[in-house]
Image (tube, rainbow, N blue to C red):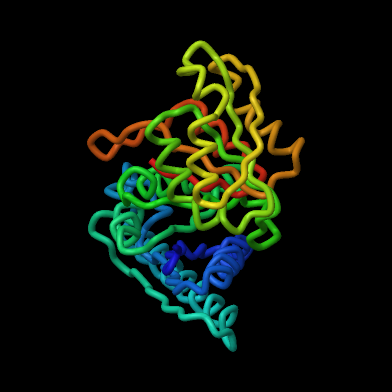
Length: 277
């Protein structure tokens, strides 16, 4: 069961839809919601910091702090009058940086909610997403920057290939799957696909049935480079509200490397993605 949720509050007001989405998640599960705003130099390139004049850095940090405080004020206003259990945190300095700090915080919550990057408008959350995925030990919902609606569970597509990451994601997502009107098990077949039982989804389907979840199975072929496109096309075709998938990749000396299909889905996603590693 989801009892508490941690949310990365966006400083840019135009991206407050992730806050609204997280509120609906907390409301659905009657969960505690913690909103965290970072005011440190997240938008100052680390490689350039030594070259920045101190006055310029001070101005940027002051702007960040004001924007973070404004994000918290908007969060408080959004939850005012609700019956939700909420808290907020303003992080003005984080020795390890916002991604590492947020991922460490997330270890104490059932679920994290973070917004997708929007590189065309200069917002890059990739490192935050990857750190939270690989380092928190908890599942993450990544919300598209185009998302307008709150949590909807009419149809969830679960990506299944028999791997450890996929099993972890589906298990972590059980509270959502049990509330969904329809759950689809999407199996994308290629030269790396495992046993015949996995291809047909027999055993994972039986496992989910014991949790009261009836699944529909959809099997589609794809080459390795087309897996993300096949997943996203199927989600659009069946009007799904969420993708559940394993987060493939690894971390190495603070460098995070996502697998190709994972990165492809997170880059072009049009619905929220529930992901675990």
